[in-house]
Image 1 (cartoon, rainbow, N blue to C red):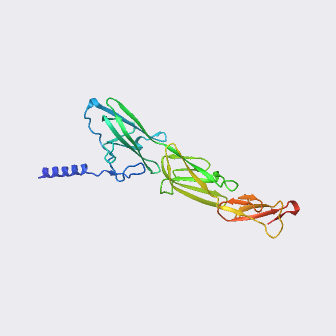
Image 2 (image 1 turned 90 degrees about the vertical axis):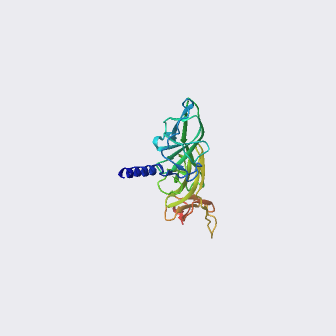
Length: 284
């Protein structure tokens, strides 16, 4: 009886080990179906014909750097993206039956963003080794800044790039006067103007960045025109108007003459009117 019980326990344990569920991996923007089941340790199919076998070596990269163990690489029969037939390692040749295969590479970066890329129809031929480089490449986010001039410049605009749906721990940072390089993918971008006591921001969400390409975002913080006229008297030759952020008296947001249109960002302003020079000068 004791021996029979031990055998029964062993069979139960073996059954549990074989039927453990595979890891569920969420599908994202590269086309994998949501809910696809992938094992993290699938043994390659046995070689049916040694003479007609070949080898496949996957080289995994992100922005020119080898990923090594940070990359998860899965092998599929062509056209079947739901049932992986083997797991591969970056740089390690895998002996396979001759034929065509699809390969999926998964990489979770240091910002916990999962990225997926596929290589389709890799042709393994008898007696040869196929080397295939799969790389997550950089693209660039640039900014077309309108309304800049006397009130602000592109360098006054700060930029934070986030993984979609997040607002902490930016993936990249910079200013709007230069492009920002990020790995291909989709991002939310915070664009913020801070100058003096003024602050304003714009969010652009779902910005798609393609490998080797530049995605341009139009930015314009100009809130409209401010026109100042002088009433109750004749024209004031030599009059100068200065527009200051409310409560400040230095670094005017704009300078000009009465009747001129001043383009300034949204906000409150103080106006200073200066007429004449020397002893005959007046300020209002």
